Length: 630
Image 1: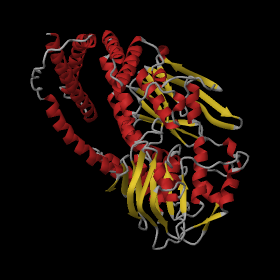
Image 2: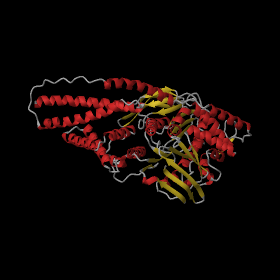
Image 3: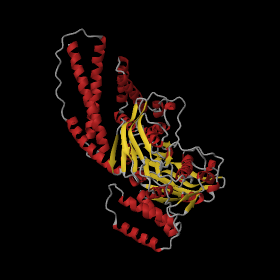
Image 4: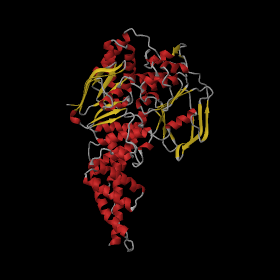
């Protein structure tokens, strides 16, 4: 039975019909992605489902008022809320107990006073009374994985990315039967995205989400809905299956042959050989691919518009970094970093959120100054910098006017010229849209327009900071093809692992402590090597953690007068040790589970070791106090 049923839904804005008479359903356990071009109505459809917008016709039905949670691209919070109030806003008894425990634990870690000790004791008793230790462990995992701390700070003090992660944590903590999400991977670093993939695939969660993260689509989704030209198409499979069947459909319908070529031949070949663990391909599917490929090759093709740009000449000296250092307050981003760029290098910048990736790009392009050291830029270098901040585009300008302000044409590698209008067509701006006012564009369409203004400058050194955010799959394919043909230097910061794998030959990994590790290879290769190293470390840690602790030796201390504080501590320790022993037993049972995955094993092993150390320390203290009280 469907958790969600959508029947004959229609929506238009003025003369623009977004969709007409679309119907679909989501059953328990299905993880469904909604994909479409920018401006096709994805976010509008989600707003209708959340009752933030009204359809012109049709019906939306959730089964028996099941709990549903929504994650918006721009989440909102109640004015004045703290982080923990935003996280635990439903107010049920279990959430209150967990909320009180997390706050008490944070206070106790900052200051182990008698008052904070008492708060922690009461909070632990509440968690015990609600039988919520397993739920607490899940909440702790969510908060830690999404890097959410300082629960008493105001939400208004958070950055946009921190608010998005907070909103994501909130909907995960709510544990709804159906979760509806708009671009959940935006503002997450690569570690967080991989964690979220594992979280969705190992938990019984039903999803409807908008995302253009192709690895996410491939690894998480069971179904894909494509909204195109006002109609809805459903594909029962992941991203690889989607692009295969989409191309077959377009070929059979005799429409847009060249787009089928682009999305099918280039994309599918890449997906099938990309560096990820995959089972052996079905022979029938391989044969079908070859047959369709031959058919495509045999038909008369339209002249395909290639974006092979004649870039500015690049000289012998490109970019030299000499002992550069940079800090923001106490946060060290770079210390004494040296590097000389060579022609044609393609480098991906990786690292957790907050380590300074954007600052690094700003230093290279001169948007920020180094604290010490020197950056020498070659005389022939023309930077094209696509920043997260973007540019201010006046709403009263037409799309083509924005591009023509940069240039009327862009020179191509074969000596021809590509006009502003032709370039706009290539990036999915129809002739009609080119004369649309900027104010009428969607967020993704504005990003595409900004990207065009960068490319129109004919750069020979491209610096791209999260260029894939809010871009649709067609535009991503076009952009990737341009960058694959680009002969200049390329530096990319992106949370899109597919994009990074396809375009970056080597990585700079910012550690957050001022160092930069260099890795020759793709991001996926790097992650696989890191996982193997961590797996070995975890195996060693597991052996140590599961080894029986040495018997505690009584401390032969001289008799002293026992204070009230020590008596109180002694009584509290007995309760704390009992609760910790219960937690240790639960963790041991989880470790003995033969179906445990790698990420859970790492998390539980770490928690087991910390719990064991805490028990040992408290038992030692209990023995000391028992000798005194004697």
